[in-house]
Image (cartoon, rainbow, N blue to C red; front, side):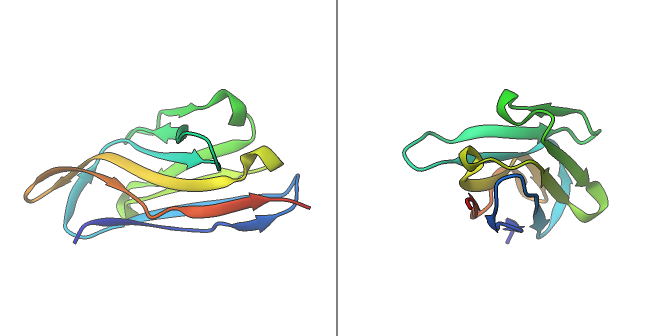
Length: 120
């Protein structure tokens, strides 16, 4: 079974930091782009950051300069370092891999989500 498993969410005070991790498991040949999305209560899911296999990155304007996405291709893992967190960053964060190559074809995968709460 091919899946993405996230970790690292939790409660943090404004101005604090958290690091999210997302590891892919299963019979995977290759993962192309990976990304992080978030969904706050009552809002639509939005792209936070994405990274290509070669390391090119893209960020939502709201997180530029505060969040950093990175990946370890050997471990099929993507990270999101979140600094200077604000209450408006509170959301469920989801890992996404839109094109995972396996022995039986291409798949899009989503993680189960991890809750990040920024509050004093």
